[in-house]
Length: 314
Length: 285
Image (cartoon, rainbow over all chains, first blue to last red; front, top):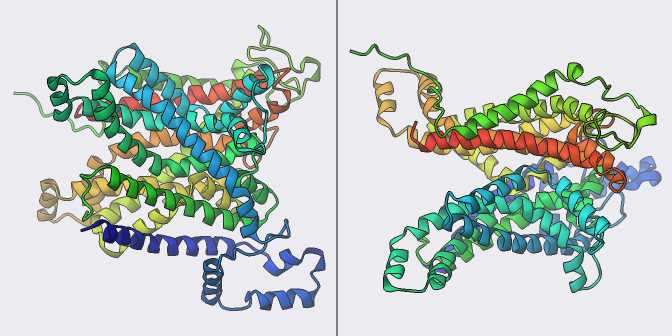
């Protein structure tokens, strides 16, 4: 089986999940009591107006027909109208997507930068104090709530030491890096333990593998054994674990964006929920699920490129 | 000749190499003890204002200091433990029962049941968990009211999928074993085979996962309260307390810091128990 047909098969697997996702989100919003037309019109909700809009939006049709409308609009990129912001939902999402993508990728980068050296250290010094220290630290990262970590970092770096901005997103790219350093680090603190544990195990296994033995026996310098053999193999598993955990990172972004007032999708979600702006909640749920699916797809594809041993047929 | 031993559901605990299990049990036990005996341990009221002693730093009279309403933080932390532990246990236990049952049935019978359960699992997993819980809560709040009750229902609706995946995978392995064939030859019913024989061999990974799930549920509940969507003040809850202290970070860091540390200690306890249990499985118990 070649790469293209593998790609085709992998995309085909997404179809039932996507369909299921649209059904779930459609039913979720549909089960809200109250009239959508009423909510959209607000003060202008005279009975005639409501009746006209109800007909326009197809809300008087049977449920399956409404679902088909919903999917049709979705395909053409129409996610409906926000109740509160007076804008199409897709426009709101587009405006907020950038900061969240930036934050998530930044957090991915930081968590790799934290986890890789720590897991190598823990594996090389297995069961000695560096290993114990790394394991204790990662346990701490797992059990501390991220809003708390965020507030503590804020207190230390922004309020006491005054070396980093308190909140916001900034205007230029270097600004984004500075403004999002603490938010991204907060997510990375929660994510690193999830990476370190399997990575440490993987590196321990790789260190005992035959090809590493051979490398040592050939007299390959230690740095090269670690970089070219051990690290390359552990990078592959890092990517897989990151792909699986992207949903957790987006969840973390919701909390962290709210604490640091980053104008991203996560803080929009909390605003929309507080304001009962259901079309926005619906659009965000779909959008974030789509991001998770894309990331899973990308990691799968990258994985097959990086590791030629993967059998496409499976 | 030895007398035949009684078969144990949980094999006898061995002390050696089990320090993490016992340390975890001790920590969780201490939290339970403090929270249950809170009215006898602390002389203060967890909700009543005492503005004359507001924003006092930790001292002999107020071990963890006081908040902006003069309430003793230690008292509120241990009262909050009642609610947070309860949430953690219920929000992990109910999905566990649902997920174990559905996962076992799906794995054992296969066919359309398996397809339906696994499709639901696939869809649920594709939505970030916190986002799923938040949007379910947004909708449920219209029907059952906001706060704790809608959070419980949302977690029950979404949380079982992780357990179903774990148990299904285990059951798929177990049902190929000879003892299952023996059960069938003996003419046992499906229910008896699944729930008395297969599950007994398949349940351990789910129990280990449940320990970290308890931690995640406590983190979830406290995060929701922190965001103002869960438990509402003045009810003592760790996340809500941390949120209340936000505006006083500079004058009184302890208001926000202490509830977070309480979560950390509790989470540490459950994680250690989980690690200990996982170690036992690795040793081949």
